[in-house]
Image (cartoon, rainbow, N blue to C red):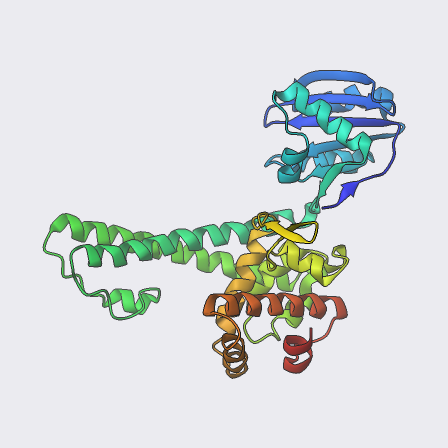
Length: 349
């Protein structure tokens, strides 16, 4: 957890919503100078901050519409801090909660040096990162349709399609043994939606790959990541857009924690008191490395390495260890700007 510790003359905490925002400005002593609910309009906020522009920092809890506020502060030269929503919930939780109280607590957290920072992703790459996430959403929806088709066959005690229906050619020759017209219509509706999703996903993947290849900061890293046997264009793009700058992680341990590749542990007086916190981190990186671990098993070196892990751990634990190893390897590949090597990366990194 990183805290914003820079000192300023004024601290502005904003409880942001889609149409309104509650603004609280405090000075170095903690005295409240402004406490007002205003429309979520750039000029209204700038007018309110005019007397404090000489040295003010703006803090807001991370939520879906923080983009415009971050861009406004950047353009106006105002320091902006994005708060980690989950950490802030734990820190400033209280018996009573409303917009007025939340804005004051955000301002006081900034003043105290206890404001948990989240990464404010740069404006020029946000849309591309959001597109990779949207593509994953469509893939999950398509997978739900595949699962429903399989379940419908099982529901009527029919043998499930022998071939993998993820491939279009197999869907075209798929047998539909249903006598009931309604059941048949349900299967045909699922298949029609699958075709629609597949076409959308194909176009998105082509656009994402093209975008990443011509993106100057990512072009070299895009090629380096694909030297890993289990990472193709889509996984490479997902990792690059989620990481952005590998140097923002001070160590490989910080990176693996952010990617949810390590199991958090709570200790007190040398004793383990419990777990928790496993959901903190980037779920999209977690998915990417979990997917890469499974794909790595298709390679000969992957099979051999996995068998070594299986002798020590269960199958599930071995896959988690493999995903962790791949995460460490990606960190060092991006940091050192070098290609994949079985010996140096997988076994030593």
